[in-house]
Length: 464
Image (cartoon, rainbow, N blue to C red; front, side):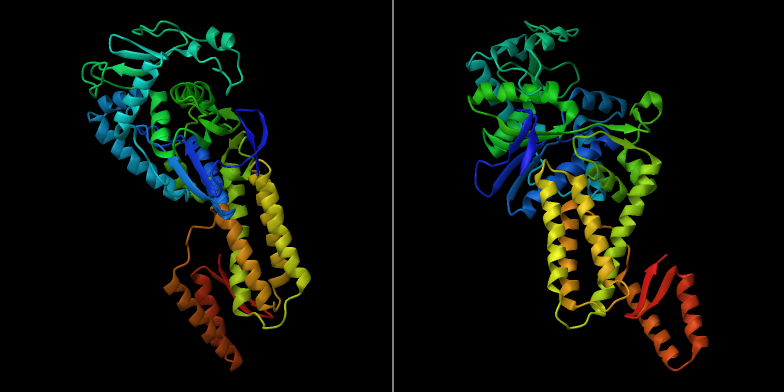
């Protein structure tokens, strides 16, 4: 597999440090509010990447943090007249509801910044002892210019980065480029005891400390949104590599932005949507489909029209699953055509080829829809060989599982049994030429939104 490594700027062959194991860290949410539609992209994209690694046979240690101490949390807690801890716990629960709706699997570990304060303090102390950090009145800053490779992730010269740097009000740092590792406590803020007095961690240091604590000093892959390349990930590299003297992450992947109706999402423009709002209105599955239907580095334009297109595409996939289930019930035990079996294998090969080429989920989805056309042409309205249907179903489900789709279980098993019983009763009535009863049963099912289709292989039904 080759990925476009943000660090090198080119497609690199992905080879993990330990054979058969991928250690990956994905920057998670700051839990002070509901996640917005833009946050769903890295959630869905890197969940799918994890699934693909597992499909390829890797064991994946997937770490995604919760930032549960930050200026945003402190300010929001004051607004809601609650504690930072209570606020964070509330929105972690809400995050998990949205992530579950998107079929995003739980991380191997979901560390919280507040649970790793000792690791954070030890890492800052190491940087201070090595001369890469300094303290002023309880604040601790990283000496950015001491790290000669600063800017290697964003590929920006230090002088360009320096031009945009500034010292904020109440900051006492020696250089505008330096960034906070530890912040002294202000009145009414949460704090922890440290060698520099009462305070709390800066934003950038938490991911370095948690990654180091859980996955070790060097990881295989670090992921996040494009907006995190600078300064967050640039600063992670600087502080991690100065502390350890080793490469922090060998590969970096960043997903592109999301626009709303071709405009940047903004509360001032009135086009700011939470995942909860969109999920409740359209369902979560179309959101996931949209997020993986484009190449992860390409920008995505979100609109109602795009959602409707996603729903139509998902319907085609659900229909294929239903066609396979129906075909399996009516399959015949004759040898399958070897050419047809080989064709099925070729679509899975195309899927893998696309995913191996910088995780191209757009082309991988195209391969799945080619597979769907192939399957439908060989099972719809025909008596298919059981071996073929079983093989087709196995490949279809395998690829769908990698993409994390078709997880909305709309069919109730008991209700399905009742429908099947009515269809059998209708068939018996038709066999006895009792067409009045047969028509009444059809009308009853139609009123329930059940559409019957008489085919050479038997009666097929689906919900309207």
